[in-house]
Image 1 (tube, rainbow, N blue to C red):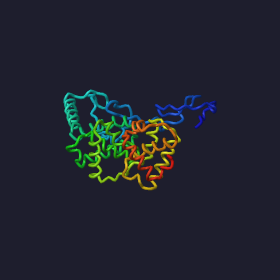
Image 2 (tube, rainbow, N blue to C red):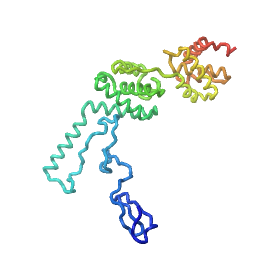
Image 3 (cartoon, one colour):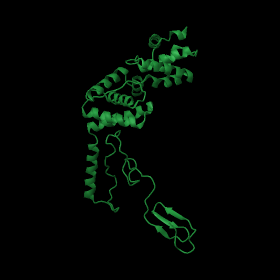
Image 4 (cartoon, helix red, strand yellow):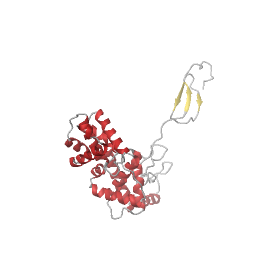
Length: 299
């Protein structure tokens, strides 16, 4: 929009985001009033109240899902005037009841679980979508009273492992158990409970998803990685990977590919990189050699 005043035809316009006005720099005339603001929304939270016009973010990873209200500590009304003594006492009692209402056992369980979830999230580097689904599964388990008699760490870790599987993010039982400081046996027991009672259907991990991870730790070349992927692809076509530990299959295929490409990587090094014992790697490698007729490659 251009200013119609004489001598202002070439003067640029400026926008004041605080007042919402577009002004002419030549004569100072206001051309547009109350334009739509383009600045981002500011979120209010318990630590920073009153900084913007919108509420806090809504998330399943919060005990109250970000929908709670807060009674401010100031004893002033909307005009800034101080409240009367009776009204101050009334608000004091309201603040007490508000704080007591937050100490419900279910809220405490959710708060403890989601604090632990955030710490595990940082250790495993899982995306926010997986964390949100984990919180959803935990809330379902809580509503069905599956948390009774079971530790919070076990249930929230099992929910995270299931969410990783559903999203196709390769995280093993050992990875999740180590991040949450519980045993693999305890974690697997909680996973079985959730799968059974929440009527979940989980597909097993694809062994090829672990090849790059193991190879990067063991510093195995790209050519050898492609050879391992080819071995796993042939094994999958023959249907011999079902029911096998995907990490063990990936480690064994890498070991065989190293032998084929004359890359000097010992069983011990691959075992340390994958977390699979050398006995298991030898057993799975022998199984792949026999099943895929790879013995002629080592002649």
